Amino acid sequence: MNEPSFLSPLEETVVVIGVGLIGGSLAAALRSRRVSRTVIGVGRDIDRLKQAHAAGLIDEVSTDISQAAARADVVVFCTPVDQVVDGVRLAVHGARPGVLLTDAGSVKQPICDALADVSAFVGAHPIAGSHRKGFEAADPELFEGRVCVLTPSPTADAAQVSRLDRFWRAIGMRTVSMSPAEHDRALAMTSHLPHVVAASLSRTLADENRRLTGSGFRDTTRIAAGDPELWCGILLQNAEHVLAGIDAVQHQLNEYRSALGTGDAERLRELLVDAQRRREGLG
Image (cartoon, rainbow, N blue to C red):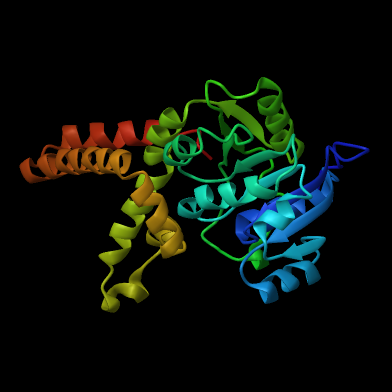
């Protein structure tokens, strides 16, 4: 584990809304790196929050967003994307002047558009995660070396954007900025579409073939094990761009179908070589 980046806390009190995999990992990273003096975890299930507290992920627990936000310097929403907007509006009611509100959602334009009137909000998406869920899977190193996309509005306060940049870099991330629309187009192809493809492939598995699956099938379909409720919200929120991605995949499948149907080995080889080239270097 890397040594903490700051001798004194970057932010006194950080409130994490939604202490699951992402929220729990964020809380753990903030504590291990001493980025925040106090981390308050907020959620609906007090028993789960108490368990996260007992596990050492958070310092305090609350089920009231507005009350917790009243003590916060930074509030990070790690809830499903379709819950972020309502949550931010609850937080605004109790928040102090100067508070920074942000999120970790995988879809940005619907959220940022709906919160355009909330000057304290700056959107973000730390691109990190797992098919596992719950704070039990939390990892303080989950964000290390990964990219966090910042999606500030054109009128966002530059000081707040810079503050958010420092916040995510403090837990080991690299940051880039782009518009919410650019983010959603890109993530549809690099994150949301792969989930649809993995889920589709998984649904082709007949029970009698389960014992015959190897690492290739398991690796390719791993992300299909993700939380269906979470992914339903993501896909619906970014439906336009995901549909375009599905069309692109169908075009590629038709290319393979054509090459196989005509026995065109040269074309099939071209497709496979191009796919290999594009995959190289991703790790």
